[in-house]
Length: 96
Image (tube, rainbow, N blue to C red; front, side, top):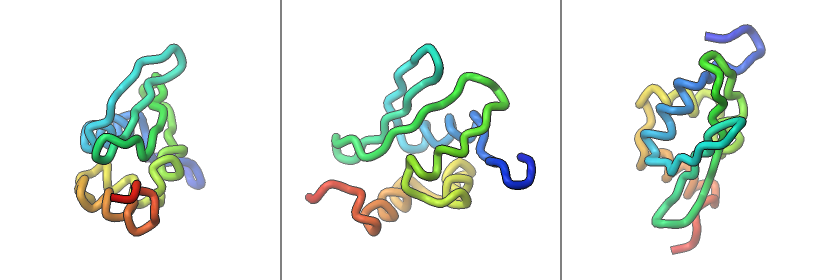
């Protein structure tokens, strides 16, 4: 999918993750912003670049997960509930 050492995450992966996590999308001139909420509270956000083959190596850090976890999330190998459980384990979710 990508060159050695480069990001393997593309715009299609970013859109898949946004759909899976039911992100609120806001269109901008340079990119689309995807806001991820947990019980109404913003917990993460990331940009989706407009270019069809644009690399999205920023996704893992902005989603607080690894590159392989981001790829698995996009490929539906990690569920929405599993993603939020990972954030909970990392202390990234608001106290309930």
